[in-house]
Length: 128
Image (cartoon, rainbow, N blue to C red):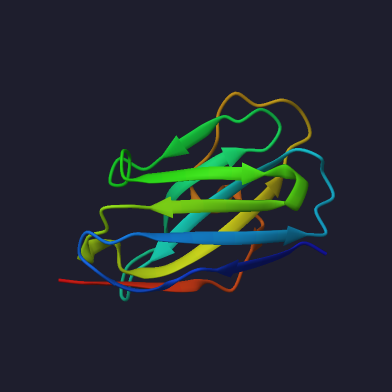
């Protein structure tokens, strides 16, 4: 059973930085899509960033491109999300997600429905 455990959330002022971590265990496939999603109160969950562990393909939502960086430590089965220049609109619960990939992939999905394993989330609050 896949387990994803997020950490690193917190409260920061506008312009601050946070680094989220997602430790994965129980992954069956050697190659996976690993993604970060967020959900603000009253809003739908949205994709933020994702990475393909088999080749490094990366994708970002337009709203975070240039401010957020997703990275991977394959040896630790851990995915990171470095968030810089944070804005109040970045506030929300941040979730890590995963999906096994049977073959090679040159792209990564950012839609919620593409992932089948989810963590419990870590809260990020950015004050104005």
